[in-house]
Length: 191
Image (cartoon, rainbow, N blue to C red; front, side, top):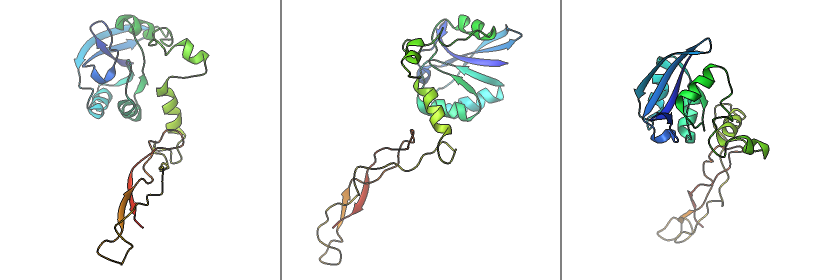
């Protein structure tokens, strides 16, 4: 098995989005066989996912990660273990030996206390919600906007020089979280 960790010096990089070094490790029979470093650009997550797949990486361990890169990595079939902190060698050794790295290496605020209060870290909740979307393709229904999109125009349609077009708040595309509700701005028909 090959895994990758985002690192800064000898630790897991606290934020994936600004990390620029990967520690690549090959694991077999509970032992770390090989370790090497590779540079990467986290801004282009799709290229990172392609690179990891080509290298045979099946697991990416990182610190905090934004939703977009997390989804790109997960959609590409790479197991993502986010919100991890600590010494990179200790994390790899524990993972190789099959020891749970959660909550032992969880970032502060993401360990036992979150679970004790019935909360899970956002990434795992997002993944569960994404799988439960109506189409199953990680897209949700259109969100509900705050109004019907009707605005005020210069005069009624067909009378005078203006057609009565106005701008108003209308339905917008939701962010796809859970029920897909979100707010948006749209232009509507005037009266």
